Length: 223
Image (cartoon, rainbow, N blue to C red):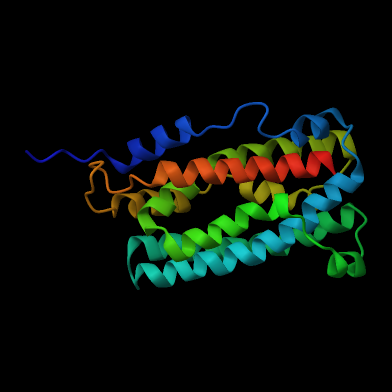
């Protein structure tokens, strides 16, 4: 008897709910919302993100290539790679608001706890099944987008940052209907497996992504 496949939208919603972070997964966020996070922690967030963006952009481009030209997964990962370029363009204004100089940016040494996330994304680019990776990333982005929305609001009200300085966070916090459509198509492209949905590894990948993201925030809060 053939098991009926679940709709991709349902798989994404269920996985995102399952992997939704708890209140302790981001110890930096409440400090920013209270206005007690030091400017140095905000600056390190920018410095670490510059390294993460560069790594993730290459990983997404490689995933698009691995997926094959014209496929739903290739279109999804290709759009993610383009998004990283747009995010990098917006990061400069945030760096300037944090008082960072070009010399400080160039000499910064990233921290292992912050770079575990992009290291795992790179591992997924080499080893993960593209539809499962698409599911894991989409679930993770749901949490990341929520964090960015709250950070953008807090930076304005607590630190007096302007719209340009918060543009990096607004970019990820805003709606992205085209990306969502491509995510659904990429997840739906998964072939049947033992789980009956073709993206059985996605939840496992997503759990690790969420853990590494929590390490990112914990490292920043402790530094």
